[in-house]
Amino acid sequence: DEHTKHVAHDDPKMFEGVEARFSSYDFVRLIRGAVPESFDQGFPDQIAFAHIDMNHPVPEAGALRAILPRLSPGGIIILDDYGWWGYSTQKEILDTILEEHGVMVLELPTGQGLVMN
Image (cartoon, rainbow, N blue to C red):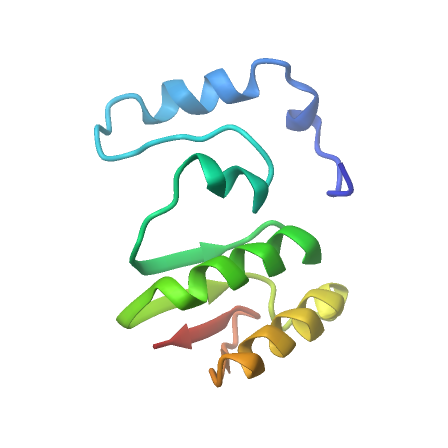
């Protein structure tokens, strides 16, 4: 609810549209709900790649906290908008979580952050 509003967010059939887009991929499982609360409905035991891009510190922090302990050896996390000033609140929160896990992040010229396990 605190996320930047986009016209697409007002579409009452947005989830159905996403389902249609991914319907031909049998390896994709969609779960409706907020992050990280919806992780209770299904979350992998081990994660090799994650791209975190929700443009809000609360769900991004929740996702990172859930993903880091499950990141496989050699696993990668991309933190979108990590280096952009407009998202500095997210960076500060994510940095604290990464430090708690002893993980460093490489800020890329694209503004993204790269985390490798």
